[in-house]
Length: 255
Ligand SMILES: [Zn+2]
Image (cartoon, rainbow, N blue to C red; front, side):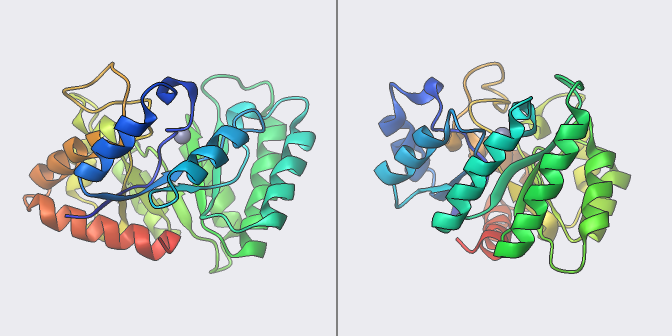
């Protein structure tokens, strides 16, 4: 069985002491690639070092996270632009809008999102969207930019069936992780109606660990708990879920 963790921040401090074990456990579960979303200039070096340490498994994205869009976001964006001009990345991410933590930089968040979408189109890269409390707003931005070439994923999707269908209509994937295993998330009911051809698996490690690890540090190997839950909801085998979602990840990211 082959799996891809399409979203894991395994380069941040939470993994400093046991990253080797985390990587070994991921490989033991059949994970063939871990895609690492960028956050900002303060963590780009750690991400690139992790990729260098585990080139057979860990692959970097590049981008500016909406929660890191502050007064200095123009400087942050030029750092991202510098990296993009130097080498190839698997995606531009994570980018988007976050209206949960702080809405005082809303205009700047929109600007950073738009500019990074334009770079994605320029470099022909998929985008990985963070859309906390802003799914409809992010969808609107995607629709406005969709000229048939824009591609990507709404990472950590936890919206309604209607939103899921609109995302798929826009040609985008749904990134599904630990939230699927949470009681009362309602995501199980949504997923019942969603075509697996539009689904990617992710952990969002170290956040949002699936049951039975909820509340603990999340890691890539826990993706099997999400895979099992999705198999149960779709009344199919774990192997089938792995096959389809891995094929989707390979198609979108070219991994
Ligand atoms: Zn993330």
